[in-house]
Image 1: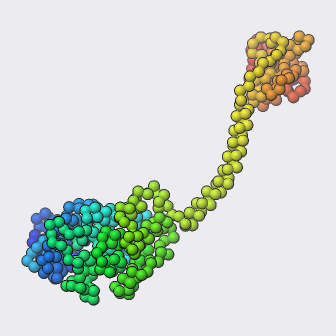
Image 2: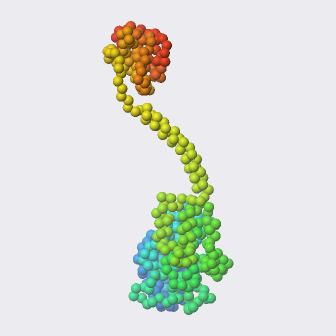
Image 3: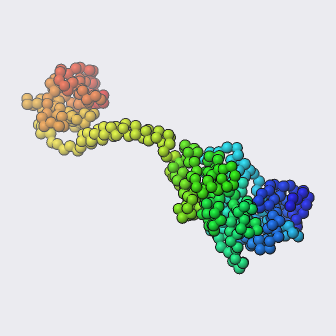
Length: 439
């Protein structure tokens, strides 16, 4: 049934058509009571004439209205107007994910936030016992601000019979969207969208939340590659591919992280028992690991380059570390505390001992064998002191910065002498009292 602008269903005025599919037509409408725009999904005539189906959709809409999750398009109500039955849904602006994929594959840094929000929506629904069963890019919208909204939860399936309601007939346990007369076992058998149906769903078996996990894997694969994991010329070919073939994993970008590849493979296991069991596990792979270690590209050119750089740095740093350790040991050995005594004749006055800048020698004033004060030097690793010739009557010795010379005062003159040997050299006069110097 097609509606024109201006038509009314209860308090809702039709503004324009938004789309149509196997589960009916969707319109933008104005809620006259609350003064807001909504989406009206008009149920197909076959459903509207089946009281049991209408009652079931009403119960499911009531349950789904309680989900109240930011990534699930809200269900506001179920409107009856004569023979017309409509779901009143949140109107979500923006492109569908199908529109976005039609422009090309989605880069990893853009695809991951979208995938995480899809997981959030499915996890919230599954925790309330609700399966979507028709997850596909056309049922996912991405608002301009990046918020993802999963649509059509109003046509989802409860995990079990609604509380207080009649048992669900077997032919109602298959996902909505495509009706196929060739596969009917009763009036209006409903199938899922072929390209996203899990194998057990395609076989018409009872499904659980793992069918949604399969569909999520298909959607994520399509986001990253721009192509569906299972393709064919018609519905039959697509279903056969999903039942018998593996996706072409080489279609994934070369930079796809290894753990993300593994996640996709676990989502698309044909046997439900081998498939990822909970969509929350997928969310953890995509978010909890965003210390980025779990999603860091592995087995790629970038990884080999990083490994090569690490190897080169290791080869450089290990020898440097060995040299540094040896030097540290030498410095540490040189810095060992040394205790010693200087057995000399009585030293004259104060300030008559000086330590070389490198800490390896000392110089001091003490009498020579004739009893005359001279400069003596001694290496700290030696027990034998040496007299420096030409330093008679020396006072107040001090070292040059390089440790090669000693300066001293004698007879009001400043002189210097090389500790390696040689005569002392006159430098200048020292008038008045001299109490030491610095080179």
